Image 1 (cartoon, rainbow, N blue to C red):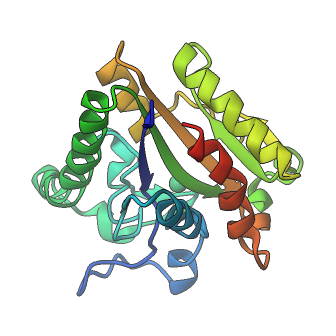
Image 2 (cartoon, helix red, strand yellow; image 1 turned 45 degrees about the horizontal axis):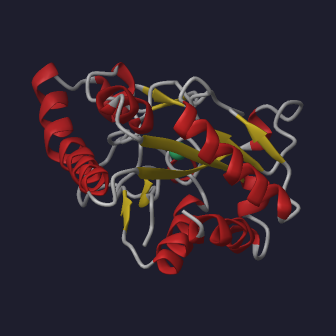
Length: 234
Ligand SMILES: [Zn+2]
């Protein structure tokens, strides 16, 4: 029996908007990093199939509601995303923003939280793996690597799992960085659950795969398959 349960999520899985919604954003921006994480769901879905568990996946663009921001964060219904303006959000009243968060953000976080709490009861510890991707073109000098593993170095249980994950990824020949291109303690679903659930054995780790990998033929499969042995040993 597994000692550590697994929960998979992918907050930025989709660039689409709900039917009838027009945010005044160009199709090019909707299909860019400003709106979703290319390849992140492909990787999460492969992990899901291998582990035989579902993956929590965001249905809509982060420009509509950013599922990787806490509900009270100003960027949860963003006015700009990665520099791209989101005109359709600019005229919303506070009540309209709150309604959108309640309808589209709260159910997602509740579902992930419920799944995490169930694993904390049985088998008693949980790894929550949240799949994302980054655009190396946004910072070419510092983003010359394949995969970032984001975690809280001050959280021993999480740091140990992150080390094992990085070992597995490096074993597959991938260039891996700890807590790059983002910190593991920034505003995010994993960060919020880590704070909320402390001191329970919850590890919330974000996998950040470079678009240079996700756009490669077989790139997403390569990252996912590198993690299969690690997940098997949980
Ligand atoms: Zn993301």
